Amino acid sequence: MMPVNTYSSELLRKLSKKDHYKDFDSNQVYLSMQESPLLWYSVPLIFLKSKKADSIRSIIGVEKDLKHASLVDFFTERGEYKLGPYLEEAYRAAVPNAFQKNLERLISV
Image (cartoon, rainbow, N blue to C red; front, side):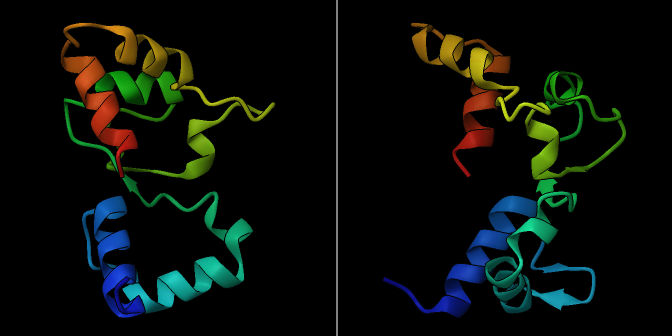
């Protein structure tokens, strides 16, 4: 168990690699997510590493120069997880390649 301030700070830093979003501090972001989660589905908050995440960018269908993706980007219109088949393959691999390791790091957030 930890204080909400600590949790919100860790959560935002894990997602976006920043301690704030625009003019909101981590507490405000967390409370807003709890109060209005639908509003946050399309906010580009999830950090994608440069170059290493180019494969992920192409799978989820975002531009190569974007640093952040939204939650909506990771799902099809039917609600299917776009990375699902690739993650299943990565978990089955005895020796995961760089792309598979990157996928595993992305979902461990």
